[in-house]
Length: 438
Ligand code: PMP
Image: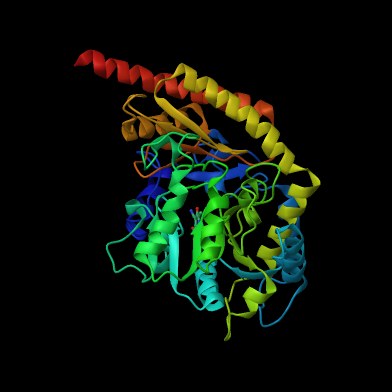
């Protein structure tokens, strides 16, 4: 099929709510390690990794060779028949997860992982109410949408009962108008205020992303989650860390984002990068919490042998190549480059993130901080033209999200910064031309 045919059929046969990037969608053809090619043969440096999912490079032969062998051996049998793949993966995860977390429940997506986590916290605590954060993203099911704190990703449908939202630790746009560190991390007290005013006072749990992904890589001050953890415990809840984006070394030097904040959660959810592109979701917890979930459970494809082999190979590779360290070293180098671009372009209001999860928030004016969604959309187009794939996010669509494979080098970062610089210069030129024409 030609590019035009694919785009036309995409619009004709898929739900229109399946959104695509760019004014003309980019039709992918193939990919290799940090590069993606479109159907017309144009090559792109991929600094988004299929939405924080390609952890160790597209079609990495160290993963695909094992996947291919497993497809030929056993594609599917379901969890009613144990197999080596699921056990080897669960054992490995038990070694990597913090505290006493050692049991896994496998599904197919982050949405399902979060669904399971909420049900689990409710079963374990005997309480019902859940605290989530504004600007958070939890998935697309009815419950996951109810947990989500962005109108962009919620339908006008009755929300799941028993979910209330607290302020998020968004330092660049502090919901309390304060400045860190003089603020004393006052936003963290909102979790207690919400529990006291909007719940029965006994909660099932609290769910949050250690760095809010879709929300625009919103990174909390280091104290935030420690304070919140104490509150959650005081009111009887389980602490759920949604590691769908931050897991598996992405933030550098730690396997999980929540470990950066020195909190040991009760429940962890994962998806995306765990299997380097094979569909996976997983919920991890301590045995006594897992045991509180009564009744039978099955997810037909959850723990699929091919997916489990892909996930185990991904984790093995991350460990063997010490990519936790690479994410820190190359991520810090990337951060320096982005800070340099911020000094050059007033359009960049904030640079944030951790490791190889870095974002820039674009504003029309650094003083008023008015969000710049049109400029962000243009930057996406210009970056594409320059040969760089980046992602978009934030409540106002004005944050660029970058999450390249964790095995990139400083040379790849140099190239990405060069291409971003070129794209930013083009956006600046348009802005000046528009201002001049007024
Ligand atoms: N949690 C977070 C933090 C996510 O970023 C996402 C996906 N963007 C999800 C949950 C839902 O995952 P999925 O799309 O696999 O259902």
